[in-house]
Image 1 (tube, rainbow, N blue to C red):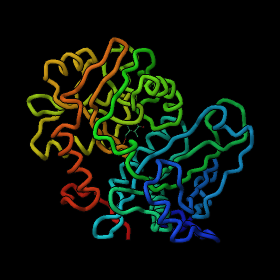
Image 2: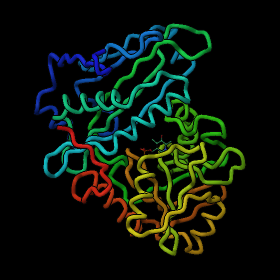
Image 3: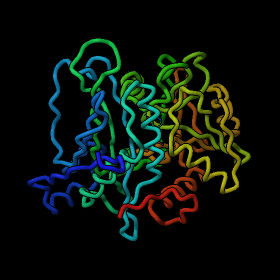
Length: 364
Ligand SMILES: *Cc1c(COP(=O)(O)O)cnc(C)c1O
């Protein structure tokens, strides 16, 4: 470590980087999470030594022992963020400090090593910088996946004494195939995602492992995503598998479930709350029951519903399927408020709208 206490990254460029014409071909309509850039960043942590061996290098497989702790007890956390190429050619990240802060919170909940926010940011910036040719223009972006897992070779049950932090990246287009204007969701009456006192507010792989059965059920019912209700009463709407949810009421106000500890505190969610209030809309963080949603969709009290997150941005929910039937929100398409919020948010992210909140972080 240097005197200013910052990690120094060694940089070893890929010996045979992907040629420009292959990159260009890969950036045409990439499927989400299948095409990766040439490099990765890794930092290791060992008890007694702290963070060390910060590296930017060619993307390659990890070598891990069969007794590697993460394979047995699932100490793993991640983040999801995007790098954008603005209309002016400038490269930017959206509120990356918030990802760095949430990553520390997730690590704390999972008893994992604490990565300083400055090091998280520098790792992400280093990858975006070296793989900048992979950032699509237009509506695409470079999805960044920082993550950390327990690497200690040990089968005992306790917090591991060794971790690897890593960042990889993939160019992405729209999350839902064909850029659908509204999705259909399945409300799971059987499975829940997070219980009080559990890990619902941490961005850990385990939450996703537990939610996949409900996502499979949703697909079998012809739905794009699953909506989870609370674990205690199976009554209150919490969020989707990987997205928060907002309701637009007939008085023009917005409503979203409160951060009760069982919901992932989305950065998109927080940004929409601030943005909507700036636009003069009322936003309430208040519990909303599934029964009420159904009744309000029928009476017209709920006009629109949308899901939000980094991957899917802002996506209208047009139809809702559940064990007792199905109902539509509004006319089943994308509503006016949803469209306006998406346009404001993506406008800020891509440098087309003024960044009045100072959310855009440019990369030199
Ligand atoms: C990542 C995630 C979100 C969205 O968070 P953003 O910071 O907006 O990307 C919502 N719910 C879950 C379960 C998530 O994992």
